[in-house]
Length: 505
Image (cartoon, rainbow, N blue to C red; front, side, top):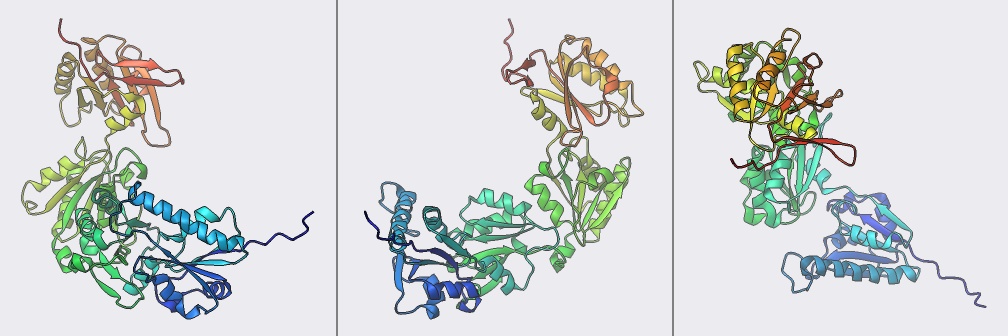
């Protein structure tokens, strides 16, 4: 019988060293390094390790050092699995080397620049070893925090959200995320710098971007990102978009007032596009109907000018007047601003003196028709027409003519503004017009409060729809002769219109 006690296993530490200045290491990091048997650190094939250089003053001659040398960094590899295969093999071998020490009862401290769990190489050791050995992760000051400190600018304030991005993302993806960000840090520059700069420019954020290189380290450099030579950018650098709150506009910005008409989609923040988020965040003034303004988060320093729903022309001129005085103005509109909404009112006013020189942009939004169609299935799968049943701005005679023409053409119909407190007969009249040429069993989708707390989708036919159940918060989708309503096996009902259309004869 073997009575020899089992050898106790060692403890694994992931040690965050902070952004580079050794004086920014935590007390706990110094304690762990001093007490560890083995010090492991990653390096490129040249053998120099930034992590080791940060911790060097705390290393002792009796420490066992384990350099974990990457087989590749930015160069190509002939590994059969490519770059990813070579790195996976390296991480497995490195973890096995550390496991030998841990099995022998030695404690192992894996050094990591910044924070071990923040884009750090240590995490690859953690995922392979932490379930087998007692483990402690010692957090460190991140390079993002260091960059903000060196800039002397808040990263986020109040209810702003910080977005951290790797520069290795595709330029299109970077641009979309940067456009919608309150503030952001883009890491891993180096060879990715031209794409990151292009993404910032496309997102309209280049003028706000700062470049920070080797924050807190020797050779630190800080500059406006637009002024940086791409050939001079190392990997240990980042682009920073700091907080927008209380950031004074530049002289050029004051001279370039503009109006941006922004589509909010049918409901709350989930329906906003990144472009819309960016336009709302950049605005100094918000103008719009009170109900729609309530969907936009409040930002310190941003002025809000809410008004009634029936003063579109006055609202448009008010926004243009603000822009003439150098203000950046966002006019908010539900759905898409170009569909029965504020873009037309703004452009109509901007097409005459004294507003001809005011810059106007339109930022699209998800329409009510698209939103309702998605909830129902795919009723807009073929040609369709969009008609407003409101006769406040056009005579009912014109509406009837358009309904007859669309119905005769067998188009699916999206009917906006079907009813209100003061308009109760229009929908009933519209249904009669459609029944002149369409079958009574034609599918009708009624979507109410899309995206809101009272969202509901009901399925009817032309002859079963009760106009009394419809109000201004509804949109109707009337099918063509080809539109189908199907009850599926999972209990859901879907409405869809085939993409093909029967040939004549």
